[in-house]
Image (tube, rainbow, N blue to C red):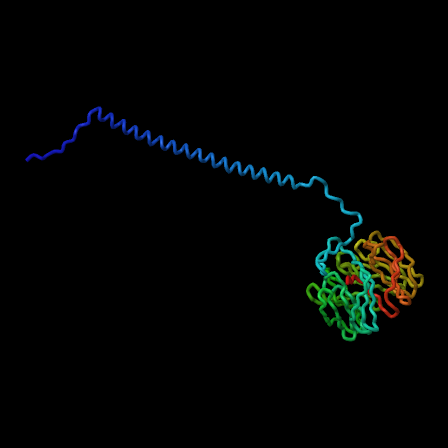
Length: 376
């Protein structure tokens, strides 16, 4: 049998032309769709860029306006000519900072009465503050042991070598065994941390014993000789007290400066004079100074320029009490020449600002003057 063959019509020329035309038409439509899609995408991209670009320009323009408006249009006011040499910043009763170079803080008038062991302080508001602390055989040894910018009530009991301290920051009591009978208390801020160190000078071996408040370590240094008197003070202006003695036999100050660990001596006055060191020129450094009872003259060497000044002040029976006694008539940073007269209980202060007299009755015969920055 013959195999049946399927019929496949042959394409004519016209059929082939229509097929090719349809293929071309479909391809053109596809190309147009792709082209339109790309065109729409480009338009959308331009819109996005325009939107964010405008926003960024607006933000920059707004920030520029704020920045330019915040600029000062005038120069800052000049610093007042009569600004204090040192400003103390307190939070409540606590000293939190100082914003000027180191200066001796102002002193309040105060006495310690051995007969009752009572301290009497006349504060800046001219009000009396009292504190019973110590016994008649103690030695008053006030200092700022807690670093709050206020002097603490303290006595040294040589018979037991004990320091008894009432901290002004919180009223707590501290007992410190440091020293022995015969030692001379010499509390001062030797390490510059803003707190006074418990310290003594031992005449028997001419040794300084210091308990550092910064780390609690005890250090000792041989400095001085028999007959010397300890006079620690900041002679180099670095904010740390220097070990120093007054040698009456040669009328000479000897000091070991903490800033350069350098030993310096300076002769002033004569045998029999008493040391009265203080910052009399207000340069932030203690000046070598002595007072002679036979002629009532204070002899002061300025650390600022080396000049010598002589001031006649007081009587032979007076007690020298140099200090920075600020009031409405004297607010500078210089130590004032001053004496306390036991027979009258009167403080005679020579204002460093103009040399005028300030006389204030505070204390009685038998008291021991203890001027300091009590701030009570």
